[in-house]
Length: 144
Image (tube, rainbow, N blue to C red):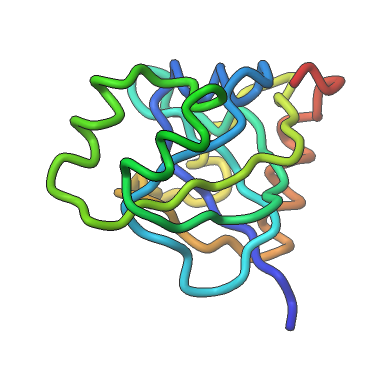
């Protein structure tokens, strides 16, 4: 089965932490329906650009409390914000980040998708589209 790429909406402060390597887990209330190996990072407002990508190692599933107790050291988010995000959730997912690369040039998604609308959570991206975005971003040396 071919693995997929997704475009993930991430707040700029967390996108920076992922790309710096200090945030090694990205937490979500829902998981991907198909196997994913690569995740493009769309930094939300005010940046509104694709800023890099990371390879995904594994998605851990559990209660918000159990994932926090296991991964808080590398969460890149404070405890209060974490539990506020998961306030009504019984399940949580922790995407384990294997390696991250920042683009030398942030990419406007409208350069590839003129009718682009930021995904609420994530959107699947065709392999060819991901390759074009990476070329537009001219990958910078890994700093994460």
